[in-house]
Length: 156
Image (cartoon, rainbow, N blue to C red; front, side, top):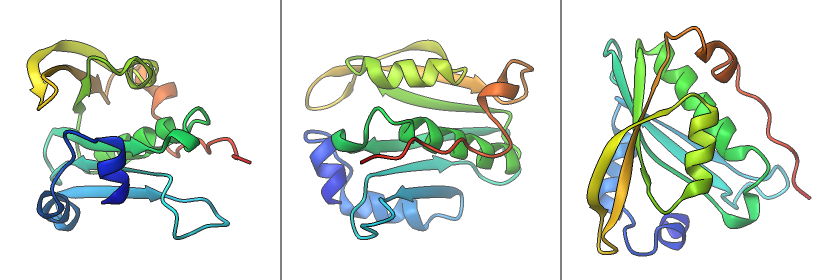
């Protein structure tokens, strides 16, 4: 929860909401940590994709500022997309803050396209959310969603 509240200062999930999602069998969560510091969390990401459903939703992704810029976020998203595909999803949705161009760039490079805007979605900051989707069955997704995720660059 410390990483959640540090990264999402004003709109962090509650402990109850996080616990509910992490223990939900329809959800799949990843946690990344440095090999030399297994108690330090660098990032986490969560997917909701019930088995057999045709849609999934990336619920959250958080990467510490220190771990950004090395491909970790991309690798987490790729891994979530691989899991969504295994569960039967043909498309995955997400919302991203309109004021987060770095995350938007990562998603676009992975094949996500913008579908619309949810005005004032992130409260209390009143920041819009861009709704994005990637189709996992599209031929152009082959390079973006490998059968195995890419390994992020090592951080020193």
